[in-house]
Image 1 (cartoon, rainbow, N blue to C red):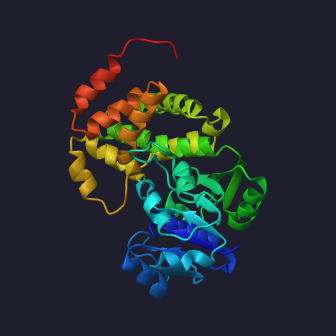
Image 2: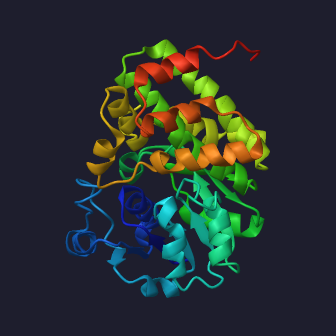
Image 3: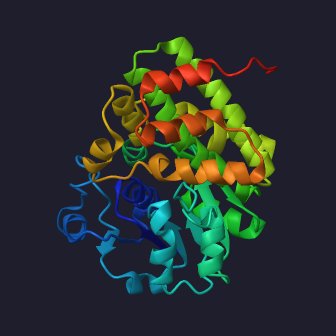
Length: 323
């Protein structure tokens, strides 16, 4: 199975490294010409994954049309760009493994729903879980969820991508796997705010627990399964991204907690903090589903310029309720 990767950032490059294990050919599409040149000329992605020696069987291209000969495509473009990128790619019936985490603005569709609209003949799988790209690329032990309704395709993808340090757990719950990955980005911003504002570890632990309750309520309302949300693609990913500055979303939250404006923080980044784009869409989708998500609403308020002290006070003054 020849793998193509759509997206030349750190995560896309790390997944290309996983797929190239053993010398298997991998074709990676990157929008940035310097990334293509760096991978093809020096077997590294100096812009997004510096210091990692990439397999020589990874080749990069700036042409989406070059991916037409691949047997499966790992879609690692940012969630808000997936529709446009897939529309330019001759997908046909090629299986799509969605690795982007988010909800599309405007439509409030999950990435899998967007992919189905753009490429209705393509089978859909979702790969999600607690993953920092530099650790995956370095071959450190990692476990993720591979969700796909087609059991045969799921098995073939797992056999192709799994390795000694990259363990895959099978699921048929595509929706639940996607929701965990999308919501945890927003909650990671909230936990970063706690860190940046110096509110303490007690507050962070409480926020993770209450945030997970929000994730579960929304996931169930959208048709996800509780066991998926308590697994690697939900709780597992949440714990990782809510506890380390290696998380782009957590780092964004730290800056917000220190009182820096969102526009300044987001303008400094070449990489994307998906939670900043997902938060307002998630707030709208939750309202549509009749799901109460106060932590998500608080993150939106901070991104819109509210004062940290006012937002924290509003959260703490909410009426008492049963857990």
